Length: 273
Image 1 (cartoon, rainbow, N blue to C red):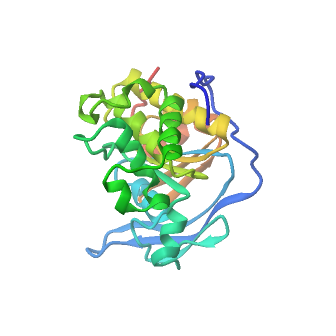
Image 2: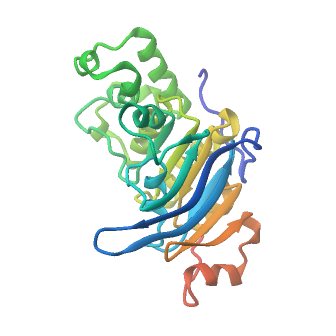
């Protein structure tokens, strides 16, 4: 990684070189202990380099699907293959090794606010470097250089020594993106990454994700509430409704009728520009 980020072009990206499935989901279902069925019979194939946006009402299963992919939540049934490895069967060290290649970005950033920005980004390398020396702040020089490059890629390298708590929400989310990049992932899962941000900042954060997809060829699966952002940045949209797939196709295919099918007859689309 080198050089600062160039502004991403508006409009969805075709990503890297689609063709090889980076992720295959077969008959995936999740029923929680209280009997709530969050997912039912999900079947998906995600090509390398796609920017997939998950949409749907709150409670439709978007977050559960993302968390099943990296096994933060164990599915009830079904199978998940990531780069031909069975995530659902993996345990212990094998599961940790698989997760290293999946970056995760959360709605609430999940930063250590009292630590510096640089140290938060370095934490993304724990799966490779190990904890003992890193807990003392004894990171290899090359790893520190890599962290600075990740911060530069998301346009925030000058904040490396600032406390995370001193940053705005949009800046904190960019730190979280840089932390995910430290894993050298081939897949990034982003769970409502702009839900707590204002419209202008939301678009700014999404532009960086779009750049990672376009320039680095990273496969991204991102859940969003706003269809306008989904249309702008996604190469493919998947809509969930009551835990089932309601739509899988191109952004342009979601017209007014499709929107009502996904969100309900009384729903009104809100634009973010």
